[in-house]
Amino acid sequence: QKEVEQDPGPLSVPEGAIVSLNCTYSNSAFQYFMWYRQYSRKGPELLMYTYSSGNKEDGRFTAQVDKSSKYISLFIRDSQPSDSATYLCAISRMNYGGSQGNLIFGKGTKLSVKP
Amino acid sequence: KAGVTQTPRYLIKTRGQQVTLSCSPISGHRSVSWYQQTPGQGLQFLFEYFSETQRNKGNFPGRFSGRQFSNSRSEMNVSTLELGDSALYLCASRPGGQTYNEQFFGPGTRLTVL
Image (cartoon, rainbow over all chains, first blue to last red; front, side, top):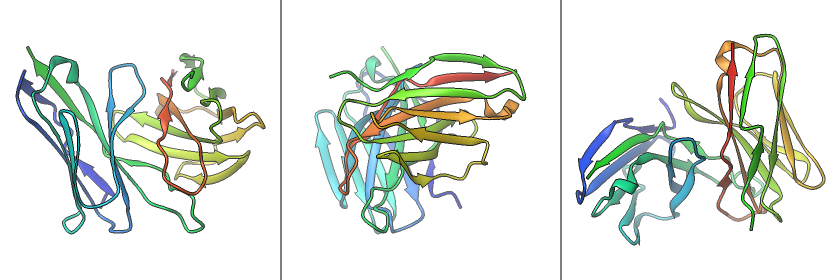
C-alpha cells in the first residue's frame, strides 16, 4: 500500500464551482499535512499547511484533516481559471532526533477551471 | 529575497553518461532536499543535506549522489544514466533545524536521457 494516495484526475470544472481534492494516507505517524500547487513548468508552491485534525481556511482555500480516517482534503471556493494547475498533497513527520522528515507526495490532481 | 535557483534548466544526455545538477538555496537556508518528478511515479524524495551532511535518503540506487557546500549550495550527480532517469529534478530549501518549516522549491532541471 502506498503511503499516500491521490486521485490523479484530471478534473475539469466551470468557473465559480467548488472544487474538492482528496488524499488518503496509510501511517498514523504522519503529523504534517500540506497542499502544494504546481503550474506547468514551475516548481511546487505551498498553499496550505496543517498539523492537527480540523479545518484551516485561507481565503478561498480550506484544508481539512481527519486523522481518525487518515483523510485530507482541499476545498477551493469560487474557482477561477487561474486556479488551473496540478494540486499535490504531501505528508511528513518528525524523525527520531527531531529533524523534520522528508515530504511524501501524492501523485497530484490536474485541475482545469473553464471560463 | 531571491528564490531557489537551479541550473541548468534543461539538459539532454545519452545513456551511460553522467550529469551534475546544481541548486542554490534561499539565503540563510541550511537544508536542501532533492526530488525526482516523473509522470509515472510522481514526486519522489532523493536526499536531504543539512550543514554539509546528508541527513536523510530516499530509496534510489547509489548512482544518485549529492553533496552540499559550506555556503549551502548543493549539487546532485547521476552516474551511468539510464532512460528511466529522464525526469524533472527539483531542489527545495528550508531553514532547517528541529521544527517544521516550509520547503521552497526551485523551478527544476528537466533532464532528458536519450
